[in-house]
Length: 469
Ligand SMILES: Cc1ncc(COP(=O)(O)O)c(C=O)c1O
Image 1 (tube, rainbow, N blue to C red):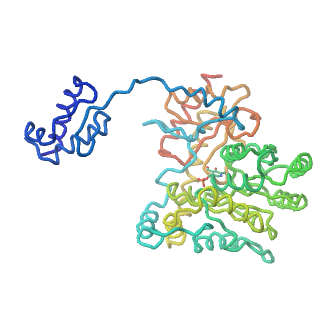
Image 2 (spheres, protein in one colour; image 1 turned 180 degrees about the vertical axis):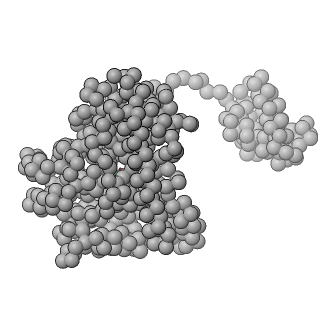
Image 3 (cartoon, rainbow, N blue to C red; image 1 turned 120 degrees about the vertical axis):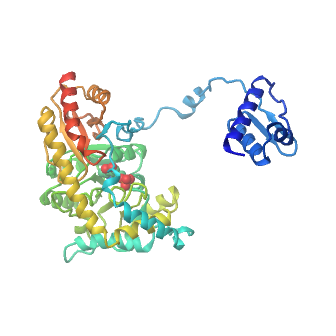
């Protein structure tokens, strides 16, 4: 008997159930077999389907019965309002970058690259190999697979100048994505009510993680070459903060990079203030016009807490990143990791290591750089041609995004909605500001599907800008 036979029995029983009182017993399986000329397997399958639909319940050894219908009434959650009180941090819900894409829309809102930019062949082969290793069945050490820790450490070591003692493999803690690393760092090294200096604009997820940790944000304006070191020093002095979260390389959202002078000056300030610099090197593998030179390579004494993620260059599905921290700070972060997740899946770590040590990895990074450059230039040209009101202040030297300033007074939310009705998804810039936005901005990701539609995207944006003006 086929699936259709089971379907026919389900249909017949549904009609019967519709008129039967709750609690009525269904005919026995044997009776159903005879009635429908069906095998026991087909009858059992039909009964399982009815059970999955919530229409019947089976009592082993007794029979199958029509489920008692419970009175549907709206749940009363008011008690939770009193139990929970007011939220500690503003509740922002999902970021607009995490909105699901609509079929046929041009999606420039997301933060992750499309599949065709990823090393698909390497990832699939690595996952198949990892599944055959011991890692598939074992618990990973809390700090991570030693070989992967060593790989992350060697990456920093390669970039460190002579005379600086680079972090060792032991200083590397493997985390499930750098988002999770940020939460641990803010909880473990800053803590509720304590101040944290943060660039403005900066990554919305860092703002969210800090707010969830109860940290008090202290925005420091940043620009084409990074923040003004005097502003950083003044903010440390005024607040007594002991940590500064920053993206010196290819910042999200602007794509800019700190000058070498700014990096050196901020490191000096951090040392003088006895503070941490939380260096988020999220776009290390997403360089376009310049090579990344992380500040962690210049730090001997554990002032720099460094984050490096593979989720955008290897695969968002592997979700492997590293936090590098030295001294007691390492122990504090490790304790937080243990409390949160204990360890990261060894299979995912083994697969990530396999990809980044594969012979094809460097060629993949080179290819990705070309593709990102071509996509970035295509999008910028299209905006210049069709939406010149959207002003791109800085050419992004790396990363995945273009950050555009709109004419003063533009209602960005209205613009986003207008674009969406025309099939273009963009992200409103307000999410990247820890306080009020300094102007109307939007962020456009050039690493999504279909760069061939960037010209169309520029046209929609230009039209929408003129509609909302
Ligand atoms: C600056 C920055 N840091 C951290 C993250 C989080 O990355 P992951 O995917 O490793 O959690 C992102 C993601 O977009 C980001 O832009």
